Image (cartoon, rainbow over all chains, first blue to last red; front, side):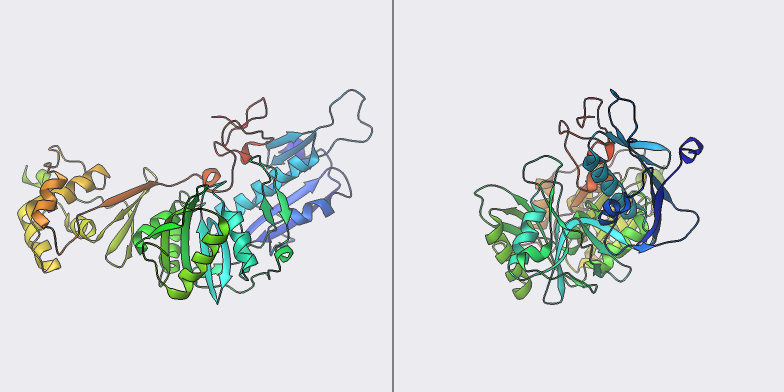
Amino acid sequence: MKKLDRLGWAEGIGVQSFGVYAGVRVSAAGMLPQILPLLPPGWKSSRRATVQRLYSLVVPQANQRVGLRRMHILYADSVRIARDTDLNQVLAALETDLHRYIAETSPDMTFLHAGVVGWQGRAILLPGRSLSGKTTLVRELLRMGATYYSDEFAVVDNFGKVHPFTRPLGIREDSTYAQTKYNPETWGASLGGKPLPLGAVAICNYKAGARWKLRPLSPGQAALELMGNSIAVRTQPQPTLKRIQKLVKGAVFVKGTRGEAGEAAASILNLLCTGNSGEKV
Amino acid sequence: MKERQNPKARVDCLTREFGDELLVYDRDRNVGHCLNPTAAAAWKLCDGKTDLSELVTILTRQFSAPVDEPVVLLALEELSKARLLVETERPVRRTSRREAIRAIGIAGAIALPIVTSLVAPTPARAASCLANGKPCVSPVQCCSGKCGTGGHCNG
């Protein structure tokens, strides 16, 4: 770390987000405008002298010797976590690591990997692994008038309420890591502000051509599924389970297979309206 | 010797109640278990002192319905498989699911004991990540947490 400290840093910023303190410093001036959009939604500037995690981004110098590859290198504390000639790739790695670090270490909140929208004062959670179609479903729900909360994390507080994590929707045009970012307003959606109680959890796996076929889950089974999508359950099991217990009260839970997003989104909204979690919703 | 035979629930797990169901988190193995009402009731009674016949009696009283020995044996087997009982020298006596269903009857008043288990994900696996073989510039992008020298997720 001392070696890194000696490199000389042009500018930096301290950030507080969900109770976690982090810092980012860069070796060249004028980089901060590219860093700020990568910070977690709702971040606040912090002047604390010490942070829990410090990111150091080394960018190639203009007067670098000819013939050398112009590498951008990113460190998290003293560990090199990304190195590439493409700055955008390295910035994407910074965003991923920072958001995940906050999700993993936040003392105030439990982060569940899920798409989230608000509908009639309640939150709809769409938990799922990568490439399970969460963002597509969120986009469809926004088109139908839902409020945008997140396409990545459901942030749950000690009262079991779901907070917004309104980063732009990251839509993969193919199955690579590269995502195109879209503002939710693109589909006429508004951004969620206040924390919402949970209304429904729909755990759907996309299968081309499949019909909407979901079965109801009991609160205990739903809690187990949510635990399976929790970022910090291994490191903070007690608060995670406590918040999940508060979260699931009074909600509807379904799990199964879905086909096209349009049909699934309509069924999910219907689920919340009727509170019916029957075999075929 | 008798004490070894009586089932004893592990006390080092975290538990949370969801109605009559129980969510149990095993911190040693990072596995979560959902115990349905029958399995949860049986697990709560496993104190190392209560024997099988006493379990049958107490559960029958709790559910206000006949709970037969095969049902309790199946519950203990499910709990043992999920490693939620303190290891005993003698294995839990086995019973078949069919035997338990027969004991409950077609229109049974209680459900078969079921324990559903799920391994808790690592932070990398829980969040958006890339599968093995996909191009990467950083280990943080990979579900495995490993970005190989060729610039592809592996491990």
